[in-house]
Image 1 (tube, rainbow, N blue to C red):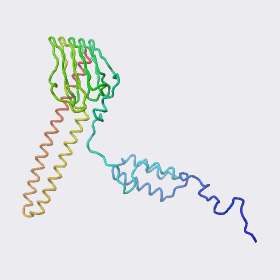
Image 2 (cartoon, helix red, strand yellow):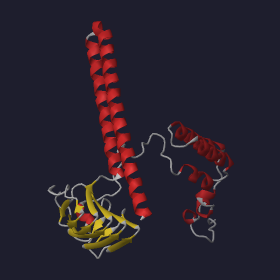
Image 3 (cartoon, rainbow, N blue to C red):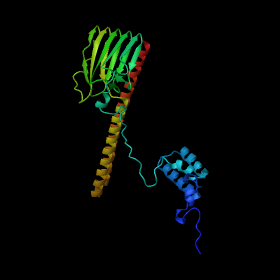
Image 4 (cartoon, one colour):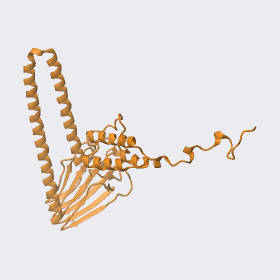
Length: 305
């Protein structure tokens, strides 16, 4: 008697239930699956990855889910248990990245002139300074801020003509500045001349004419760079404090009889460090207020003309 052979071919070539079953995302989830997702959410809440409102929303969606496809998105942006996330830097990076070579982009520049007649103008933020920028102010004022700008060439010229008005050119650290303007009953600021530029940095030449007016040139950090330096100083203070605590702990372990003296010395060091931190915070707040007042004056001056 011969074995029966199905029309579909050999037994090992037949389709399994998985081949013709529903996709994995459409399979029904069990209570154990939902509880596993809820445990991941609780861990994320304890670690500070989720706030309470978002945790409650995701937990409600978890117990409401019926399939794997509905469960998967709930924890898609959370790390698995026992897996550390990518390291996070405590130092805020400056707003403009890249080297000087990357900031010299060529081309014609995004703006090549500006005029202020009884009014004001500003060129600031992310823009491309051309090889020659011409600006004119009559009973008005202007600001040319190059701290976050790109440059069309290694050497750019800012030509300023100020008649009973004023202009201010702001350059970032590392840029060489040359001032060649002429002033009659007015003047050009030469304080930033003589500082050598960094390798590959552009050269800014300030030229023009000022009559009963002035053209100022100053070198300033961006707000993001100031914040980055502040965070670096804060991290250095934390490192020094941790090192002192470790040193005092080792001394205390070796000199049990002097424990009270070491505690007093540690308290004194912490008090001194706190005073230094307060002085630095006060100095930073004073600098921020002064910068804010300067920016307010500039906005009023440019807007009132």
